[in-house]
Picture 1: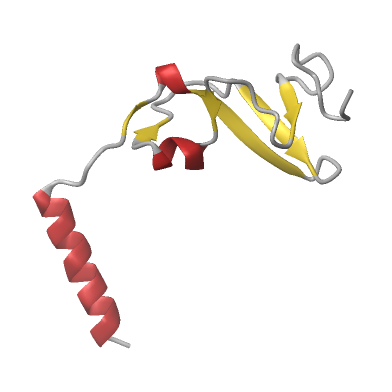
Picture 2: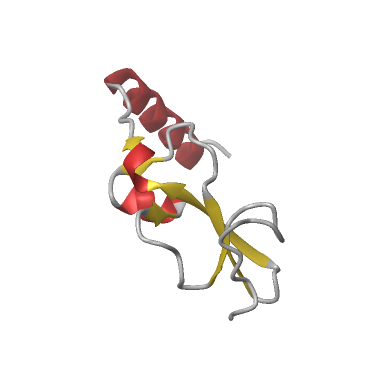
Length: 90
């Protein structure tokens, strides 16, 4: 068995899997974002550990994920204004 294989969570407190061995139906925040989703307030479902336990990525359930929110026109205008100020002011 790989070092970080703990599907019950008894050893690490959360169900833990080695690098590239995440179960189906779970994804990291980056993977959710690539699908146009966000965790949406759900609890961490599991984790992936690698590099002797120094690296950890949390996994979330895809079926509980919500669509990514989009900025309102007022928010987009404020962001544009701030970025313009950052480019012109020292």
